[in-house]
Length: 390
Ligand code: PLP
Image 1: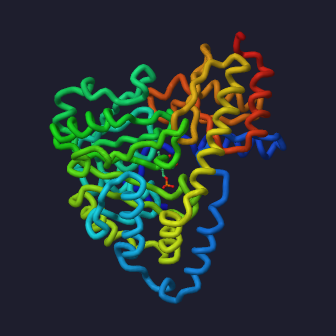
Image 2: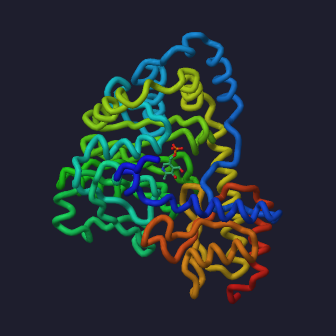
Image 3: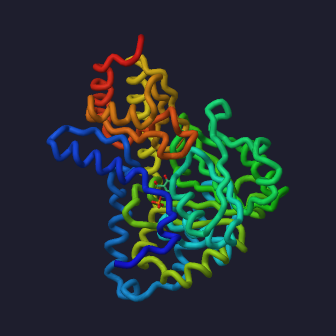
């Protein structure tokens, strides 16, 4: 056996791998588990997108290596999508990078921007893979607490002068995983001015860009004036089009950052399967009714879950976007203890907030990724515990 490189040894533990193992044990024992702990969309990809893949897969041109930096048709579709959805102009030639899903881009970005020891601002709680990318690039992490009293937005004024000055990169993510918060235009304006002042590259993770509730469409970071001078946005087809298994996404924005991503990727891969790129064009430019229906489905589930939990006396707030609800743990439990307790007593799985960072403690995350019937059953089981005073 070979000793693992230090960079592998120093990667943060995959917190959710142990949760998955625990859940598998309970399933093996024959229990009826309701898993609200994971983030895997439960619905299939819309059929017209699958058909487009099947047709494109027949085409011998797609059996060859696709062009290194992606099909022109895909990059043009990305630009048209940003124009249509957000009124933002991006140049398909040099402001778009094709990605193997959002995660790949998020992990690549620190390699593109950081030298060892450089400082990165990371939201806490947050999607754990930001930490993985920064750790692989030997960055120095400075956590930005996302507190409920600030609508789960970071406070730039609370970041020390030194950390602000030294920061090279900042991750943001709205609609937010895990809190379900959505950012205002005003917040993005503050972000641009903070980033410009300190010369920080902003990476806005827009994975849940397609999922906003109450008729409010989440804003793209690039809609803000000057945003392209200060960073990029990462989009994925995983959530908006139920294409998580396809591994397709893209980065748009600042030319120099996009160039760095493209150069790194020239050395890591050849581009995605051409047929997947062609199907992605169909997703972005084809009928968008599927997205409307998706949002309606999640919104109905949100009503079921949040309404139901309130009825059993749990004081919870509804998410404004994403497909997660961020629920305050009843007093007397840590987030891990409460998640374990629910699993043991009700076979309902939620993700403990501590897995998303120090400031995730005190919450659990529940996904809207199962049917209304199953959500109702989960509420019924939790209600039977009589944890909450009514
Ligand atoms: N960013 C956030 C906040 C996510 O929750 C996810 C997936 O769960 C991703 C990025 C990555 O998605 P993908 O790699 O499927 O594009």
